[in-house]
Structure formats: structure tokens, C-alpha cells
Figure 1: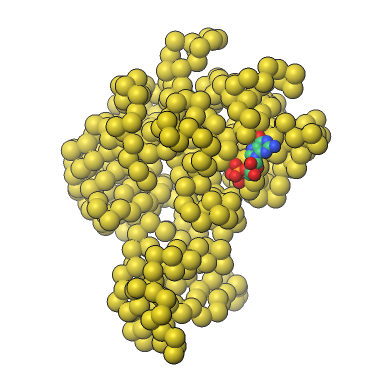
Figure 2 (figure 1 turned 90 degrees about the vertical axis):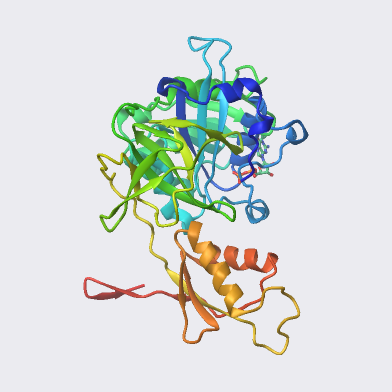
Length: 426
Ligand code: GDP
């Protein structure tokens, strides 16, 4: 992700340490094509967080090239906006809204639960013509399990064939089906057209700006109630990787304050506790990240320079009183494929990187951030068994490697079998 801090308006840069009641963490749940990316672009543009030459809709959330082409979210990303309401009870304050993207394909389902843990509320975005779709059901059920209250956004209301009342009934039925309580069933509805940049709290409301969505988030999504004075606890929920800084830990600080330069403990899966120093801290800002000196409980951040020996689910904790948070499970792989050097008669014609050493390095690098992926050496040094969550998961990796100039041959995908309670299961 690019760093765009130098492009931030001064007002944004000054609000680095937002108190928890001015903070909102909201996850967006949407079926593919229901307009999530366009809507987020619209929110970012409204809050002035796109650079002037990016002021046109650019599909910010789906920033991976394949995500744009395939129209799906593969790796969930966070972005953030600063919003100062101009009217109503909250006018005069500047809020920071962390927007957490959720993956929209079952292959990436394991990621859903983890990223939802960072949120205090969800925006359920539904196409006003199509209504709620199967994938929405899965993600929404996870959100309800975590007690996150949905704020419903009926999107694409501009469509002539929109059927708002029916779709609201369908959402109501879906929530009943998923066992939502009475409070959740009294959901608020926002009517919107992300493409045309407007939202309204009633069907006949003014259709001028996207602001009502931000007002509703500020109003309805609870602020984090985490204690910034308690001993530090940050749960590592997502991993990122950069060639320059190595592994990056991303997650929410649930207690205490994380300070750049300070020493912290990492509580690992094997119950080992390692002490490291935090080199750099970043907060989410627009579509990029901004370096900050402190992150208080309730906020999300990216931590750099704490070595390589941490993993998803580890807790970054107070070095004097390290207490781990409950771990988040990573979904087990379901399919594996053999990746091997291309030794066909046409070898070496397409790629720059063709040796097994180069393949091994690239695959190893991928496992640094692609947490559901496993790589093992195969029967010979030329081959690797790569296991992933599904065909889409593996095909995205293969295509990325191809585009980067790697040449390889792959075998057919095989379903992984496992013995569970004495029974062989796929
Ligand atoms: P995503 O897959 O949920 O991220 O959806 P996108 O934002 O990529 O949008 C999918 C398609 O719906 C694109 O062709 C958009 O131009 C279109 N779209 C997005 N928002 C709106 C809207 O508010 N109204 C209409 N009519 N079309 C929209």
C-alpha cells in the first residue's frame, strides 16, 4: 500500500490521536457487484481523502489488479476517513471512521471472522433490486455471532427496477432466519446511490450528498469502549509484507496504548513470550497509512519492525504483564496443487524467473502475508506442494506469479482429505 501522508490536509494530520468516542470501526458486508467499491470511493472523495488527480472514481478498495478485474475482494483492506458533521448533535467534532472491508468469496471465508473482530458495527450493503444474496448470508451470520449491529444501506436506488420495500422485507426475513434479536431487527435503513454520490434516510429524502451515511455511522455505530490506560493488548488479525520492512502486523489495540519505539511482548501460539521493540506504527488514513507515534485502545494499526517471528492470532502485549487475547482461528487449506519448474520443451520462453530456487523464494514470500496458504517441498527439489482455501485462492496466486514473470508448471488440484474423529473427510 502506498504511503500518502504527505498529501493529507493539515487537519487530518493533526488528528492522529483520536479519543475513543470520536472513533468508529465499521465493517462493510456486501455481495459482489452490489456497489461496495463505488460507495467507498464516494465516501473517500466526499471526505477529501483522494488526491486531486484521483478525484474520479477509481475503485480504491479493490486495489489489487486482479481484484479489479475479477470484481471481488480477495485480501480485505482497511481505509479510514476523517469526518466532521456539519449539522445535528455531533456537529463541531471530527470523527475518524475506520472502514474494514470483508472478502466476498467463500474461499476467503476464514478471513471474514478475523476482520469482523476489528469492527464495532457493520454496514450491510444490498443492491435495491437484487436483494440479499447467499454470500451476504454467511458474512452477516458471522457479524451477528459477534454481536455487531447492522446498519442497512440499500444501494443502487437510482435503478429504475429498484424494489426497495421488498428488499427490506427480504433483509428482515434473513435476519430472523439468522436468529437476530429484536434490537437488531429494528435496523435503520439508508437509501443510496454510491455511483451518483448520494444517500438519504428516507426514500423521498434529498438526494444531494453521501453525507447521511457518515452521519448514520457516527450516530449508530457504537464507539470503542476499550480502555487506553489498561496494560497493552493488540491482537494480530491480518499480516502484510513489504520487501523493505518485512512482516507487518495489523490489528486492533483492545487495551492500553501502543507507542512507537517502545518495547513490547509478543505472546505466541506456543505460549512463548518474546520481547521486541516496535520500530514504526501506522494508522489507516484514506487508502494509505500514516505514521503515528501512538495508537490508543480501540483503534486499528499496522506495526512494523517487530521481527519476523510472529503470526496471525498472536497478541502484542505489555512487556511487564503480557496477557494473550483469545486466538483467532485460520481456516485449514482444502485443496493442494503441485507447483514445479517448467521442464517442458518450451521451457524458458515466457518467464524471467524459472529456477526452483526462485520459485521457492517467491512462494515463501507469499506465505508471509497470505495466511491460509501452505507451502511444502515436494518429492523432488524442483517441486512444491501448495495448499490453499480453494481454486480461486490458488488461481489468484498463479496468475500473480505469471504476471510477475515467473514461469512454472502446475498440476491438477486435489482435494485434501483428513481423518476427523476416525472418519475420512474431504
Ligand atoms: P463491488 O463488487 O460491490 O465492489 O461493486 P462495484 O462498486 O465494483 O460496482 C459494481 C457495478 O455496479 C459497477 O458496474 C458499478 O458501476 C455499478 N454500480 C455501483 N454503484 C452503483 C449505483 O449506485 N447505481 C447503479 N445503477 N450502479 C452502480
